[in-house]
Image (cartoon, rainbow, N blue to C red; front, side, top):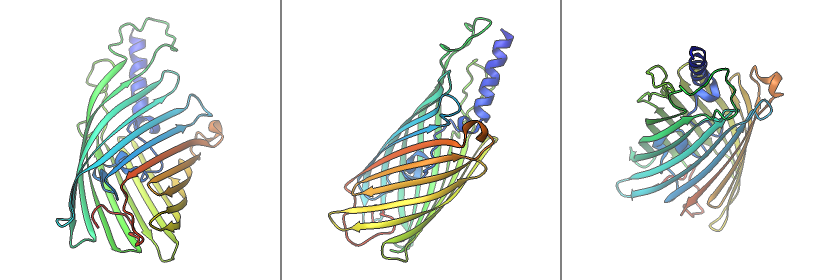
Length: 328
């Protein structure tokens, strides 16, 4: 029995330290297609009265049973006060993340509340957000083989609460330029996730920082640099990249734009993101080419990622706003 307990402790430790699993919190390369998934302060901070998103990620299918992540989100505006230049918003997201033969993974449901307000006129905005939810961490021993019985395992499912917070700043000095910065902290309550019922394994806090800008000096073309970083326990991630965006149509009846980019996740992967904006829809695809030490086994096959977002009542105007903001 000691051997079995040791194996389970090692499994928990590896899952916490392994990059894709220690970030059992959600992990997508296209961090700003559906930003509520990474920062609660972006809840409701968009052009429109509602937003719905779906995301799917399949990782390392060439090595073993693929790491798979599925997420869904919904956000609505509770208030929009044009003259006070502020708004209150609510959102929810669900995700499921599973991996390996034992189907080790997480199910999580979280709700978020955000408030944004204009400062120094209508070109600076600050948003703050809070999130809270419950998750279930577990595995399936159907495919496992033990020399001894595993009946003394305390539980194959662990339910835990999680709390997070975030803040974002947005600056739009002209219709040709914007910049935005967000910072968030997740699992700040450091919930216990031990399968043995002991106080020895925790879901460590995860911190992320995000910066995105758009520079449009041409009639139909703009450049959008991006930097995103996150830290969780012994794991650090840094993503840098650039998108090029073509505005094909911005009329009242047709909004159509195409975006292509190139990202690099430090010592891990090269990413090729593509997206299309068609009226109220955003369709996004990203391929990660693996560059890590797993390359000999993965043959550089990393992950495929699909995301779809739908906006309710997006602003319909010929005059362009660099970043459609709820009350500009």
